[in-house]
Image (tube, rainbow, N blue to C red; front, side, top):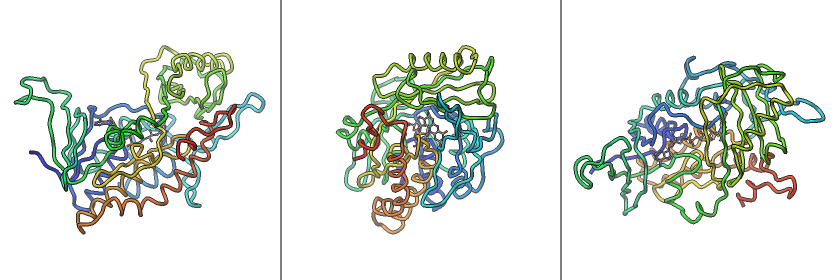
Length: 373
Ligand SMILES: Cc1cc2nc3c(=O)[nH]c(=O)nc-3n(C[C@H](O)[C@H](O)[C@H](O)COP(=O)(O)OP(=O)(O)OC[C@H]3O[C@@H](n4cnc5c(N)ncnc54)[C@H](O)[C@@H]3O)c2cc1C
């Protein structure tokens, strides 16, 4: 049977950075990714200040020019919230961590290109188009079941069967906001955790109207929905984004949002050319069990307003470092990971308490915070 020391599920920022930490420590990992890369990911694609610092720290460089879109930079002061009475005011997205303030100029990136670049820098082996389906842990070994999406089913159980089992010593769930690894690890928690969904469209710009060039516009607009909605430019597209708790009609929210932008800001958009959507489990941070570790959104690592590339990278790197150390010393990776991730967890908690867009004004209840308790 095929065997690896470490298998990482997910080629996003958490998986790529976990693999990089292992590679730096001389451990080769296999990343398993269900999509073909470069793949799209529902995201505004803003590389915040902390993300830039982590890129320099872990990868030694910022990404090359071809991953960015126009406007390339967004200053913190250009993230603006519109209020009926006041007009636009600055909206604070990234907050200092443990008293450390980050660079205030952010980069506007294409997530598909950024993630692809990151995984290429990781030094890991990558198996694309390969879906993680489940695992069984037996003593020191973990058996990981995958499905090769590209292959044709020829003989079930024989040559050409797309179902495979691969062995490893450590399994890392870096498979994002609705993690199948976390689901397999804690099915009861998975089922009981509330979900938020986001939806965004890439619409060619006909007229930006009175929206401010170079700005990221944020709204809490009752006529659109209960959550934050936002819009910003990526090259020749405006990308409106809306969110809802599970069960909400996101297409109706999107139509309301576009109507609101047209009515109040004279924005004229062409027909959307691409749509993206994602389910986010609002779970508490959980670093894993035994030799199965969780990083990035799978582990519940996200900061204010769902800013998460940095939280994914930081948790991923510490997860990889902990596994490398445990392999070297024959000790407990999860224990090391817990110790080293303490400051990230504190920041996750601080951000959760400030997550104003998940506050239901009527009930004055912060859904994420209550989910965390
Ligand atoms: C609307 C929106 C806008 C956002 N904007 C920003 C922003 O501007 N800046 C920012 O810092 N953060 C932003 N975030 C958050 C950010 O996108 C996430 O926090 C970040 O992508 C998490 O990284 P990750 O590596 O944990 O997971 P992901 O990036 O989701 O990567 C997980 C990978 O696992 C793969 N995968 C999933 N299931 C399986 C499976 N069963 N088998 C194999 N592979 C699998 C997926 O295909 C994916 O490639 C935004 C989030 C949303 C919803």
